[in-house]
Length: 339
Image (cartoon, helix red, strand yellow):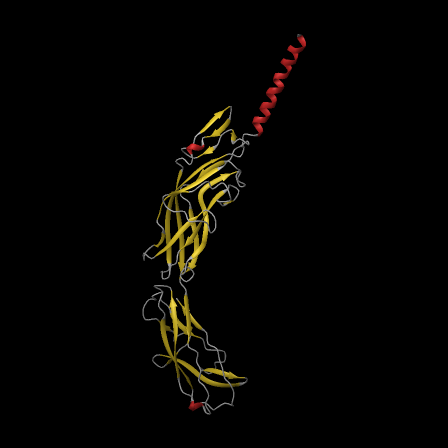
């Protein structure tokens, strides 16, 4: 009888030490935090870059960060619900707009206002990054064919719903406690907690997301080529008329200049055929030589954005020069638009 009593007295402290050691090593759980006012900056793009729509225009933190779940386990629960969205990024002064949508993964299905997602913690439906497991949202831009330069912004009001735990048994039991957003319930017995899945997704944590974009000015242009044809003498060449066509960002004001070419000398442009030259020039309206410095041409009104403005020119070969040897003469001019 004494041997069994002695055995029981010695075994109880040993069992207690084993339980205590197990508890200390396994109670660390994932902690989720919510930033209620995150911002996603899409950086800067020209008005031409957003003209026909921009899938995956940019991404950023969505307000939810959960440390310890970079590699999501089964039996984790993360949902997003969108309460409302402006649906457009609006220019701060002109009122021009650019449509947008958001998704939880690149090229994912847009999140619509008034809807709640399924569980994003499965099947790679949520993009996480950084040491704190920040959840990212991805922004797609709709077509914006004619918008002014400036700052554009819009908002999305949403809620994050989550229940996560890094210490989960095969039966979905969390050792310690689930990290939960408001409205999600759990039942715990001796620090073993089972989630009440019927309470999902719960009330969630509110977030107001701001999305911003800077549109910058740009121009697109082309020009009629200058071809004088062929003639036996310099005074036999006819003048050539043509035009430059320039489309700039809506509201832009700009001037247009022409370079001197590659062989200018003595205040005149020249075409070259080897070591021989043929003098010519390009004149803007008013019979003034068009250059890139003090005789630039300014547009008559601020740019329309979606309509090309035309700038006429006349090119002439100077008749007061000696006729150079027979050959093919050429030069290259650079058009520059300053705004």
